[in-house]
Length: 338
Image 1: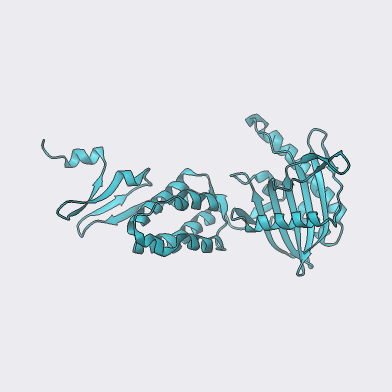
Image 2 (image 1 turned 135 degrees about the vertical axis):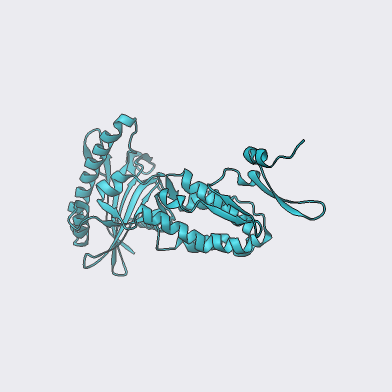
């Protein structure tokens, strides 16, 4: 991998200017920084695939200019566009007392195996005192503090191969991907929500129901709670909140090797690992039937808080098995005379 071009601009809202920060494109540290940035974005499980909304948008045209070695024109155009979009976005959120993260705009063009990789990223703007000349300099933080980034891969014929967008915020900022980059989602939120849950059912819930039914009920319930109580799906957060901290009931649970299954799910192409949850797609999955005997079924109509504390299984001294359900309404129906 070689760096063909890179640039760094300080996006100055107060002066309405984009101020270039000079550095050496051939610096080995810069190459390492850029390679780390690309690796971090590509390996991050919480990114999203996009396409350009048109081949005639400003950033899309600038990608062609990057490929044609018109680096300075393209990078300055992108920087000025980001300034305009950020100022407009700031105006729109002023009434909410929200301030956009200020920072620097880093761009790089790299070549590898016949493909161009164009990196556009917004990073924390750092000022520091250089020990070599005891002068104040500005630059990128080595220990990553990236707010937003996009990696665009294209071939020498100007054909876009892939676009990945990354955002450290829980909700991916629309001003970045929709307004600045002028992208459209490759997979809609509705399809993402539907596909990720179908994948979970196929790869996790169905095998659990066979091997460890008690764990299946609890984990599916917790998964439904996550989908219904969160606005955004974040693959890493979902796994950590629902599965990583889970204390299994059945020894057979460990036979399924859930962490390995999630590693495979993470590589699925049918959904993004970060998207806005469409709750209508989940509500149809909430109803859960549990067969208790040939004559009795228990139906859970919704995701239940602290399910383990509401429904419990037990065994009497004579060996008879039972379930206990804590319910004031149920008590009134089944209570016996005192």
